[in-house]
Length: 338
Image (cartoon, rainbow, N blue to C red; front, side):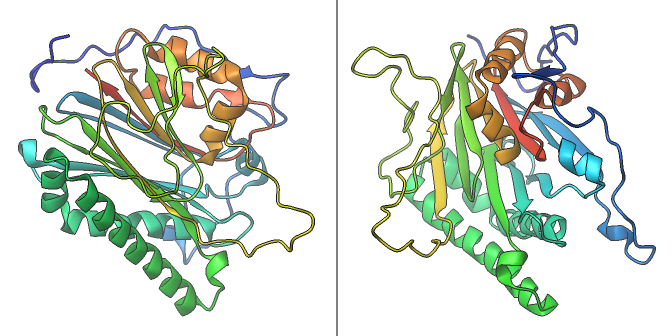
C-alpha cells in the first residue's frame, strides 16, 4: 500500500455505516443520555468536568481519534467523570511528538476527577520537557532507553500526585489514579508506537480483521521492537483460534494469608505498526466490555476494518455503544495506520 504524503487528504469513513444502540443480553439499566449534572460550587467552577471530551489529529502515516465520556452510572447519579484525557503535540514538523494521556481516579473518592486530571497534567509536562530526546529515541528504536526514561517520568509524575494528596491532608490511596499513555512521532518514516503507564485498562490491535489483546505483561521484557512483538499466538497448539486474553489469574491459596496489595507495576510496549492496523488504547471502562462481550469486538471490527478512519462524531458513537453490566466512564484513543 502506498503511503500518502503528509499534505494529501486521508479518506474519512462514511457516517452511514451501521450502528447499534446497545449489545449484550438486554438493554442497559441506565438511560442512554445524560440525566443529572454534577453539583457545582460557585467558588470552584474550575473544578467542573464536562460530560464528554473529543479530539483528533493526523500526523505522518497515522490518524488519531480520542474521546472521554462519562459513564451511564455517573450520568444518572450526577457524579463527575472520573476519567481524564490529555492530547498534546510537542515540537513542530516531522520532529513533533504526539502524546495521548488518560487517567482514571480512584472509585468512590470525592477528588477522583481532580486526581485523574492532575496525573495527566504532570505526565504531560514531563513528556513535553523531554520531547526532543523521546522523539529521537523512538525514531532510533532505542527501546531500553525509552523504557527506563518513561518509567522515571511516570514515577515522578505519580510521586507529585502523592505529594499533592499530602498537601490536601488526604490518604494517598484516596487521591490516586491509573495512568496510560501513547506516544507517536510526526515522522512519516517512523511507525514505532509506544505505550506506557500504570494501572488497569487495555491495549488492543485490530489487524487483518482480528482483535489482538496486546496489553504488555508486567515482567521485564528485553529486545528491540519488532512487528507484533509480545502479541498472543494466532492459535493454540490444539488449533483453537485466539483473539483476546481474558487475563484470568490463579486465585490465592486458602492456606496462606492474603498478600499485601502490591504497588501497580509499570507497563511498557514499543512495537512497529503495519499499514492497515488500528491501535486502541483505553481505560477499564471500555477494556472490560471489550474483553467481556464478544459482540462489541465484532461490532467495532465491522465499523473500523474498511473505509478509513471514522470522523469524530462516528468515533464517539462507536465508543459509546452500550453493554449491559458496564456503566463506567470510557476513555479511548485509536490510531489508524495509512
